Length: 570
Ligand code: ATP
Ligand code: MG
Image (cartoon, rainbow, N blue to C red; front, side, top):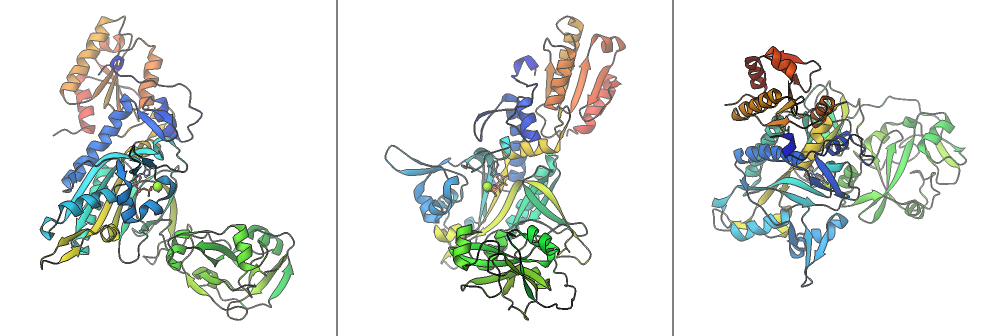
């Protein structure tokens, strides 16, 4: 294709609203344009990239035996009321009303719709297992849409839903999907990692997230440097380490005027934060609970939810904390509470001897408290975020490290979450009604585009992996308007390459060479070939791979060999 036939509105300046490099480069390269918060238009060049992601995803889904269908974006409220999510989902669900005053929503996901379809259409165990997928627009009214395609409100997802007679069958499809995701992200040229994720439910149901590794990622992912253990921060555990024994000292109360935070407390008392047992008040399904953690540990709300068996756990407000404990803010502690309150500790808080904690009175803290001697041990659970350097829970030698990731995919064993509430039953072999079990599998197709750029750029622009590049080869015709030889040779080379199956962008614009090169670098095509009077006179092509720094002069055979090496074709 000629550059004059495809609209590529590049920008010289970095748009002020774009923080992330992918957002900046996708705007600057003319791949996307913003309509409103979290809403983007795919420009011709960007759409070519999106279609390439979709193609790989579709091929791998088809190969795995999943069947493609396409469900409506707008969904009736009744289905969401049946599943219980009309109330649960909150403001991310965009609700609307039609002219007959009926409630609908814009689908943020499609469990309800696919469940309704399957309960109507599938009646016998003989029709299972089955796995349906679609590639489609989703709408989530995200609280903070940002980073361009990374967290849009309208975005494109591949979502698949599988239905099974039993858990063993679900396991098989889950594994198949896991492997399809491995192949998909590998083919897309991404550096990624699959990690164990929390699945909310109790019992042996599994969930994995697929993360593209990038420093800008919103998620913390944990992995062992020694074995293959990897999990996201919500889920990651560490092996408990034995606490050092220490002589108990005499407990005492000390004045700590105006001291509120753990850091201030440590500084004032001249101790490390690891010698503090801090209290965090949370509201778990409406009930206030006091949680205890070692001063240098961070509370993990997802783990707290599991430990307390609660659907919703959030931090208590200052007012809630004060009224539930009767103690002044900053000085709340587990020893001799003023009001009855449930207390739970993180295991690691029990490893601290001679610790300091609030004394439930203004400007007063305890020092040198010891469990059992000074206060009883409450129930304990894993409540903390792991930290880099913690011992791996799976192997003997490994230590955990923490990296940043961008979640691009998620596989999830739903079990009977929807089939129970929505009544999806089929007749089993004995002719009885049996509730089916489900899995779901998502890929953030549009987010993949942004995530790929986060991993593939340099100071000149995007360096697309071959699988994602909007065109594989860029030809820059220098001075083509003035030199008919250059114009003809560039067009002929373009045609030969296209005939061999390459997608080619021929820059035949009437621009200075510097502008042409800058555009090619910015939009990131893997291969650049320069055609000028000078190289034509030498009977060669000037070639440069996007990720290389030097030009090389190649004759036609060498050029074709070079391209073929990176694009093996059947
Ligand atoms: P996140 O934690 O990033 O909000 P999620 O857990 O809500 O993601 P899922 O419901 O599992 O996401 O959706 C499947 C995939 O859709 C995600 O793995 C992600 O790649 C993508 N995705 C989710 N929300 C967005 C969004 N607002 N914009 C773009 N892609 C998204
Ligand atoms: Mg989300």
